[in-house]
Length: 175
Image 1 (spheres, one colour):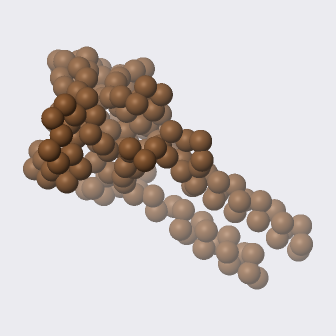
Image 2 (cartoon, rainbow, N blue to C red; image 1 turned 90 degrees about the vertical axis):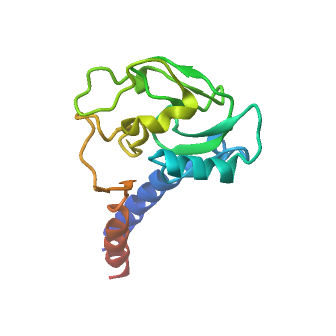
């Protein structure tokens, strides 16, 4: 019984570490300049409203809400605009601290994906909703057919598997 209890505690510690890892010290997302958010605005009206709240009266920077370059989180902040090439989603590069694009954000040829068909401004990513819906656990775009199915709603990704797992583990440890 005691071995089972210790094993369950190890599993609980692993699960909690996986849940907390993106917020750990040393992670670039701890920057006071960035605001990590659960989701990005998905239409122009919401985007403009959030822009006024976050980037009030800035002249050379503009509101951005982007998935990180590892597709494991969303960040928002006022950033300088970058040109993003067609067939790529804009992402936030945590190393250069700028909007950018890269191999993980290439979207050409993905079915049911609103992939940009021409160069665009990084502050206009909201025009491509597929680029703003990610599965941060599997680190992929939800509209990509190769991205594993997850529980989601009209607002985007919801992480509903963790609570039942924690309740199960808590009950197992408590018995």
